[in-house]
Image 1 (tube, rainbow, N blue to C red):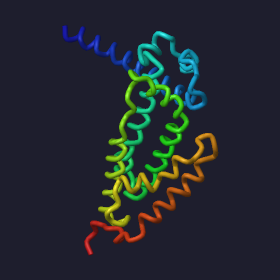
Image 2: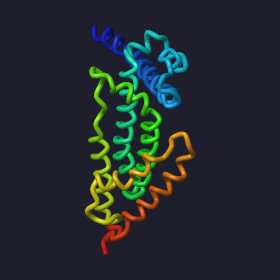
Image 3: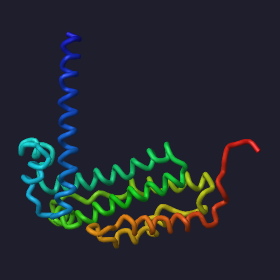
Image 4: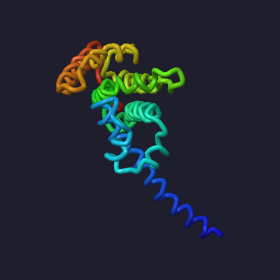
Length: 204
């Protein structure tokens, strides 16, 4: 009996892994295609993702469901990356690299603006996800930098997001990366003014 259950579980695991890969492939293709054109037929996205119509609609029963999941997925990826970066980088390096990830999210959001507008415009359509997780991630990064003495004290998550507001003015279809990098470097320079200096745990 136990062996039968173990066999069933092992058979289910590859199926779940395949289903997850299909879902991720659909999302990746959909980001590209819907950024190019908000009216891209779902059948085109399914074909380019290499999945059948049935698989596609099991994952995303409507255009609205697909667009909102892209938005939520990208938002989660950016928010979750804050802790990953803090675990492997110095706090100020983590903050700067996280800005790059925020930029990629911002450009995805800008490119998908028409699709998002269409998805949320109907009265019964899905609500646009909130940005609380993004603000919490920003705050964790800032507090880590403040604790390390590498930025001026007292900067809030709202302050930083406002300072990065110029990002949303960039055209996602342009060569936006160098301009975003210059903006982020300027913001980092500003954050460092008035910093007490890098703190270490080494004995004097």
